[in-house]
Amino acid sequence: MKTELIAVVGSTGKTGARVLAQLNSMGIGARGLSRNSQVPFDWENRVTWPAALEGVRAVYVTYYPDLAVPQAEADIREFVAVAKQQGVEHLVLMSGRGEEGARRAEQVVETSGLAWNVVRASWFMQNFSESFMLDGLQAGELVLPQPNASEPFIDVDDIASVAVAALTNPALRNQLLEVTGPELLTFDQCVQAIANASGREIGFTPVPVDAYLEGAKAEGLPDDIAWLINELFVNVLDGRNEHTTNTVQKVLGRPARSFADYVARVSPEVWGGSDVSDPKNEPPGNR
Ligand SMILES: NC(=O)c1ccc[n+]([C@@H]2O[C@H](COP(=O)([O-])OP(=O)(O)OC[C@H]3O[C@@H](n4cnc5c(N)ncnc54)[C@H](OP(=O)(O)O)[C@@H]3O)[C@@H](O)[C@H]2O)c1
Image 1 (tube, protein in one colour):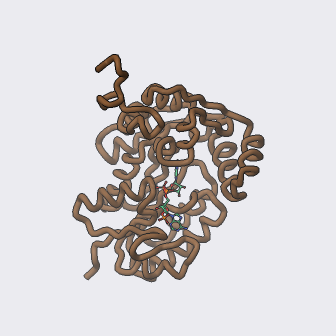
Image 2 (cartoon, helix red, strand yellow):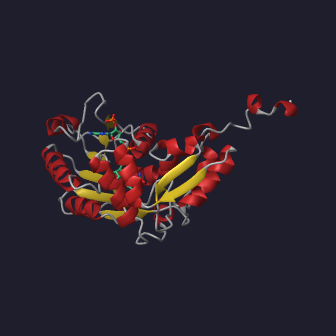
Image 3 (cartoon, helix red, strand yellow):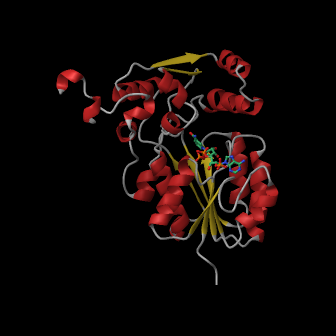
């Protein structure tokens, strides 16, 4: 008889940690996988893959650093082959919108012969609090390549809930679930919302992508990450994704969370502000 074990690849990451936590709270047997997990899994060391997938029925897959990178398609192809050898029945792939590389990896999964889902998401709200934008916000100025479009940022908690639904509800199998937040926002609007919530002045400074990458490379940015930044800001944020979907509502039966709701749930201290509801942070005159 098959075990019900679900594996989560990237289980300490933004979506993976939340997917694992939700599965645990539902009492579903789940195995977290990353380079540092009890059973280690490393995208750069294929020898680790078979043991990581042993006894697994379904797997949630986040690729690192991003499904858009050229290596992703070959890695996902090999991952699917190992998964099939190990008896995995169902694969749920985390993907991004409008990325040609990601689309090729999606097609590998869709034609794999396994039961499949693709959860294809817009930019994550949590990029502002748990990822590459955090340092700039904490320093008071977010400098980025000029984005040429608004983006319907999505709350990662919603992505995790949709992924868990895909993993656990057979009625959703073999579907591409394209998920976005509820509204189109500019980076400037997001930064201002964060500045207001954290009670600090934080600026947003868009610069031409070439100048941005030249500066970042001089400070040690690796070539592959520079390629990814160019891909995301020039080719993906070009207007092709400037629309929302109602997939979160359809799958979860409630609307997608707003950026205001996300900002309200993050402690202002994350962005270098102080929590005004904490008495020790009140100005002396208020005591
Ligand atoms: N950020 C966005 O706005 C966005 C939007 C759409 C789609 N996506 C997609 O989301 C995926 C990333 O998901 P995420 O943001 O949830 O993950 P993440 O936060 O980037 O987390 C990275 C995870 O991968 C693990 N990891 C790092 N290097 C690894 C390696 N060599 N081998 C195995 N594991 C490794 C890390 O754990 P250890 O350090 O312990 O190994 C961690 O658990 C990407 O495929 C990307 O295309 C992102």
